[in-house]
Image (cartoon, rainbow, N blue to C red):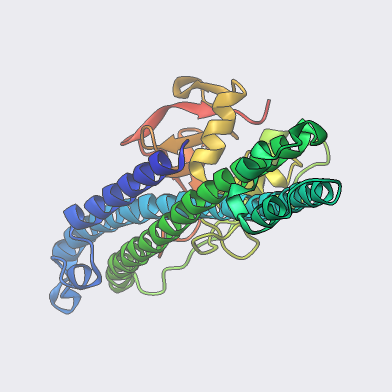
Length: 353
């Protein structure tokens, strides 16, 4: 994608995420002022009802954070690519400048030799001092037949290359700066969404603790007991289950914490398979390019579930029986839950075949 088009597209994604956050009213302050936040006055059915409300608000905040998470990952990838491109073009421009200087010097040396063998000293001086006009002066020298056509051609081509490289370098610098700014904007949006999600999740935790003091999570460690001949799908699911209870951390891919695509990437890495890298859309696009997408109605354990359309923002591992294992969003640990159908993509990725 051309630099300008890519930059505009990136800004559109960032703006869309900002819209989601704004439309949801998900800020730290608003999360603190959610309905049912005064838990000290609640009990019984009122407390149970408020827990349901708070869970819904936490899920909405988590979805916004997940979308911002994926947008930030994509912005980081694009910014890194633009920086690499700029560095390559910057190096190419430097090389072109060196070639142009050498070619101009060679042309001047040829003209000086011409003068020593009968050419005009004035003409030689013109050649040496004219800079970019050297080729024009050379063309009018009286003994043009003694100059190789390659000398002026090389000088002209070198100057053209240098000008083109300088132009590309300038464009690449603008693109790199723009994408770096977009990355920073995306990070700020993600930080805001993460704080809102964490605040909403904390309210749920406080309400649940009041309702059932001492509630604890049971950690699953079946991965260590897998037989040596376990299938890829069994290994992926068992690995994911062994991570249940570990925290969601943006950009993490284990072993102590995960984000959604970090969990799926690590689960398949445990089987020796690569699924495209760290990023929801990176994994989806690889499955799509390799013909590994199948209908959700045919989902099997180990398949990847995607959320969103076009730009996907969340990925989970189908664990069978209508359940999935996921690293949901900030403030929520890795968990196994029933598959949510809202915003679920109609296809799954089967990397286990």
